[in-house]
Length: 488
Image (tube, rainbow, N blue to C red; front, side, top):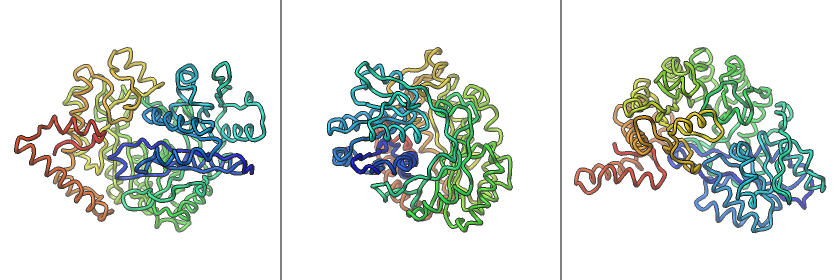
């Protein structure tokens, strides 16, 4: 290890406030990058997204490091530039990675942000980042590092792309490198992330995954996954989130993972993941094994009840199995969250409300009413641009919660308002009766009820007295970015 080279990897502090109250997870990708270079240099990871003042914390750190790495999705990129400017002012070199820099590397290389960015690690980062650090430590040229873009006197040079890694080439995450070790949770349990696979073979038109990995699916050895779970527990985790792009692409493998968790005596932990409705619905046996292994939360990508919208989104018949999937999960005491996308090109208000009624019929514990977002470099963005429906190119608002496009029947603001109303109306007395959260996480549920009950009581009182309007509250939440509130 070259102790004279110090590397800091920063998570993005930009998160959706309402989601952050349910779960806040450490950045697995940065811990994986740290593992790829920890024999070459002194490396630290700072998960700053849970801090009250992340800029102040980062400002105190960056001057101690030679390289500062930043990762960003599109809605996080602007803030990452602010952190990069701080790092550059302190004398560090900056490395950008993640979805937005990977997909926009050419535009970045030709734009005004170039003075804040020394390197872009494109796509899967472990091997490229290692070779970059090794070259900087040893003073080697950079022109043969695949997957790297780097600044020169003539501008940014882009090396050829790097082939995807074999899973066996990827080191287990280095959790010891984390500077911030507390403050990560799901409901009221300490949480960490463990990946079991990378990639997805489906071609959803709104998704950026294909831009990172292509339509591929690579699986880590289950023995490695079990070892990683054990390491996460040794570092304090009582709950594990599997962030795989599509863990149910291989249903039999997921069954084997459940068996392995039980055999390793790790079924006392609580597991959560995201999955396709069709994958979950394909096997009751799978879901029963998930329940026995300790799974208690699954996010289902249902997207829409509307067949026209499913076809537009490139989801095929994905929601046809939603009812069966939710039934299987609930029968095994697993909390169900669903992603439901409104604001599609032909949607009117009634179409958007269809997602609300679907979630109610399925008795979903936490529906997430996403708004169709024309994410950069996706096939769908080009279609929406040609339709003339995209009305906002400020990527800071491309978080799935803000409306950035009109439909043929509604303005973006009208889409935003309808979605805002749906969020509050869903959590009523009927939801209180059937949701599983109150039984599985009673302390968390009680705290949230105590926090939110006076909030909504105050809003209702002000409405009744005529002192405030629904529009006032809508604008208030829009300004704060807390768009899952609404008025009950």
